[in-house]
Length: 380
Image (cartoon, rainbow, N blue to C red; front, side, top):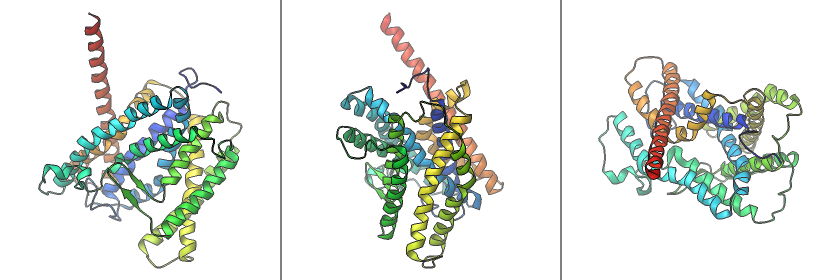
């Protein structure tokens, strides 16, 4: 198998990850302005000017955004594990994921609540209420949930690598349909029996009906690495073109049946059972199809390096950590700007993404200079 190095680096996966984080910023900015008001009570900023575009955009990207993130993370897990012992693998992943999570929980979540109260003209509260582990923060870990969940996946993957489980030699032609069927069945059962929604704890927040789907996306990524999926040039573009032409079908199935379930409770398009089944049929087919489309789009057309891409890729992880607070500050300022809601939405997403990248870039420069000075002083 080809080793992952600078010489044969898969730039398209780095670029895709950065693009997905840009979508995450847009997704979170959208909840400030989307018209249903589902999260208005808890979101960091709630602008009274609303639009339908933000909600529709969020419905679409929510199908494939996080599965793609977990796929990319899973793809690099076997390589990271190959280079380390099990202990050093967990230590490196803890430093990469959980140390930033701990710092963000102790610093950024309290800032979240400060902005939340300030943007609504509400008085600030007692210090203890600003931490999620006291039960005081409104939505627990918020956007930070991804970090401990990914660390959990890393731990489970490490355990699986030590056990000869059946199906580990499965090819993608068998794995993808299996993941699709398990995903539909799992989400249907979770929804049908009332386990739909979020589980929130001190360490883990996860969406009940999607957590297994995300883990399977992670495992597909790991399997893709083991099979050397990207070691050779793409065989052809037929599947890519077919998916590009048809992916709107399962997406619309998911959106139409989900919106009917949300806004017309008790009124079914076909029947209760079929409507829920079609929601998860559309969702699972959509994320799998979009995963193929996104991977191949970036593989065919954006498998390149460059100073700008390198800068964005280097900042992307930090952008995920800080963007919510940057968005909250910018969204609060925009509360007092008179302009159409759609314009505010686009402006907020752009400001939040650019400002987050600049903030992270500044931090990295200061960090590098500090380390350089320490190295110089230690050698004197």
